[in-house]
Image (tube, rainbow, N blue to C red; front, side, top):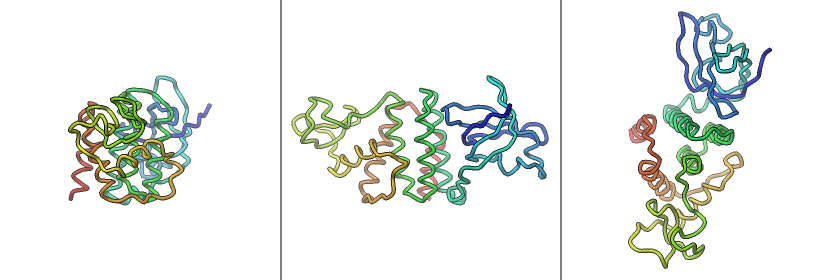
Amino acid sequence: MIKKVEGIIIKETPYSETSKILNVLTSDGIVIGLMAKGARNIKSKLRSYTNLFTYGVFNIYYKENKLSTLVSVDIINDLKVIKSDIILISYLNYLTELTTQVLKQLKDKEIYNLYINAILKINELFDPLVITNILEIKYLDYLGVSLNLESCVKCGNMSNIVTIDGDAGGYICKNCYTNELIISPKTIKMLRMYYYVDIKSITKLNIKKEVINEINYFLDKYYERYTGLYLHSKEFLKNVINL
């Protein structure tokens, strides 16, 4: 019996002279292995559908806890825009590696949905750094190091917020402020928007560059210090952006 599975290929490994083993991140928030028989053969119907980051519905002979066999693929989106740009490909590599690490902490369908919606927005040419930061801040909940973006972490005051502090874990109000680095009011507001926005519903981004950079700097340092993740794809992305 053939089973339909929505997902995206996150790894491909040559097998024998003509086949491939594929790792597919599925809409269930899990990674399954697929045998793509003959997919490396130039005449194979699977050849063009079994490359890295193919996003579609995979029709498979499913075997639980074993390699399933790929029959065919119905493409949902070819992600052509991303795949034609080295910088966007670098963002996709990073978000994919980050997502697989997040899924190691917690298997959740919503993680897959967040990831797919983020890369689709990047493919639509929305600012990849903004979309990446939005996904990063949403993933903090699943990594167990979420920020308090509702009120002052020290006293609970919901007004007179003057900055956000990574060591404290969230907003700091005027009364509790000591010597924390001051973040601009616009950045404070946008961080909260990043957290609550529905990625799929984004139709326009109008954010000043200095705010984008300040948010990215904050999240970069926060991830380094509190998530325990060191991702090679993130370092590669930084190098590509700075070329």
